[in-house]
Length: 198
Image 1 (cartoon, helix red, strand yellow):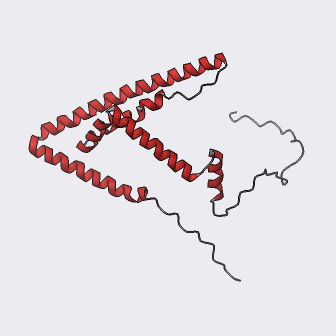
Image 2 (cartoon, one colour):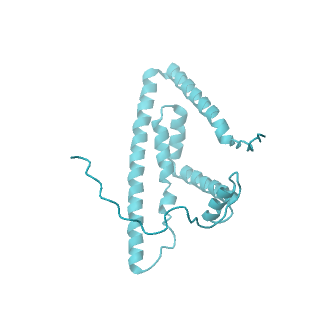
Image 3 (cartoon, one colour):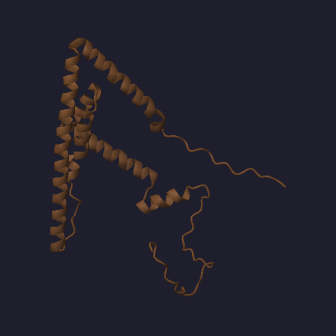
């Protein structure tokens, strides 16, 4: 009796982001704590507490406002789509207003303001500036487009096909499965079941 070794597949490589993310988070937390202690030594503990509470209140206000604006944009988009459908037109583009508004980055700025820390507050305040939000949004769109075009140069269906083809067995055969081991004829009626409670 021979025992063959099962085929071993190489372990998938971890991306750089996953490798360095824990180290980056730890460095960020140490920097935030160090800056808070430095400011507390210079300006006092009450000042630091007021800065943290003010950041949380401002962040909550920003998130609430951005959420209302996003809901208003969504409602307006649905109304315009319904009007276009009534007229028999198809919308030329899926309303660019939401994309140009960058509500997601506005909410991210509010969230960063709510997180205790001075570095996160500074980044959150930067994201409140419309020009910064627009520049970051354009950069993010280009980065996503590059990643998508590099991953699968084609449609979304091609991307799923590529993902399925890179499994260990490597083969994808289109078709349908017909089971022949089950009953082929019509099902016979079964006796009614007794009630659960007497």
